[in-house]
Each structure stands twice: as structure tokens, then as C-alpha cells.
Amino acid sequence: MPAERVVLIRHGESHWNATALWQGHGGPGLSPRGRRQAETTAAFLASLEHDVRMLVSSDLPRATETAGPAADAFGVRARTDVRLREIDVGWWSGLTSAEVRRRDPHSIDAIRAGRDLPRGGAETARQLRDRVMTAVTDLVAACDGGTMLVFCHGGPVRSIVGAVLGLSIAQEQTLAGPGNCSRTVVLYGTDRPRLRCYNETAHLIGG
Image (spheres, rainbow, N blue to C red):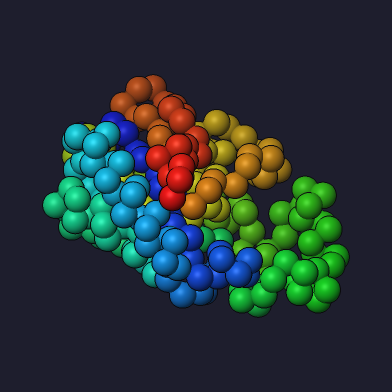
């Protein structure tokens, strides 16, 4: 049977998060703060989730490093899926927002106005949603019931929630971006997926 609960965890703070750089498919792994967040989140999940059948993450270092402590806590093997990567931002990767705006102001303004252009000449939000939802649909079907933990990125989390809520791509962009190591839960096993909670970060207070 398919998964009944999908728990989406955005990765912990990465080195490039800490220096406010665009990441996309690039960037190193977690900062010291991010590693602490990952450990705290793993302990929180272990106290809350009791029927974890699958744990999967994006293959990017900041996601796999966040998933590691949870895999240890639950005693399950972490698997990776390249389709869960963050949106590909092309040549924007490694730049600050100010640097991107100086080099490509027209694209930034058009995206903020609601047009879905390729970020950094690479990928659109629609393309991101299509690949992420294909991955989630496949993984849910393969989970054999229970709960599936998915460690990924802010873009994929927002894409999944937008699809579940039936939002257009433009409407999806009005959702606040999920925080580092935030928890979002989607319920399956009914006539359609339902959003249980979005962007929960209370477990990180003081961390």
C-alpha cells in the first residue's frame, strides 16, 4: 500500500545559506549550525514519528547531511533521489541576490512580477514542480504504507504544497519559503493528498 504520511524536511543551514548565496544544484554541505539543526530535528522526529517505512533525500550534500542523523535515529537506510534536488538556478549559483540583480535585473523583475522564467537560464518553477511531483508520486507508491520522511529543499517543499493545494505556479510563489529544518506534513490514503502542516520550526527554538 502507498505511504499514508509524507513528512517533508528542508535541509539545515548550509555554508551558502549562512553567506546568503544562491545555491540551486551547487554549494557545499551544512554549516556547524546546520549540523546542530539536523541533530535536533532527528531527535524531534524520533519522538514524534513511530511508523517510518522509508527515508529518502535529495542527493545534494546539504540534504544528505541533514538526513544522516534521522536515518541513524530510526535505524533505516537513507536513499537518495536526484529528482528531489532544489531548482536549478544555472549561472546564479554561488552569487548573492545583489550580484544576480546587477547582472540580470530584467529576469529578476519579471519573475517577481509573476512570470515563470528559467532561473539563471536553467529551470522554471513549473519544471521543478513537474519533476518533484513525479518523484513523490513514485516514492509514495513504493513506500508500503506508514510514514515516509523526505529531506529536500525549500523549492521542492513549496512545489509539493502548491500542487497539493491546487495552486497555480504564480500563487505558489506567495507561500513563504520553508525555514531550514522545517517540517511539513502531507496526508495520503484519502481521496486526495491533504496538507496537515507547513513550515513548522518550533523544535528549533533556542538552537
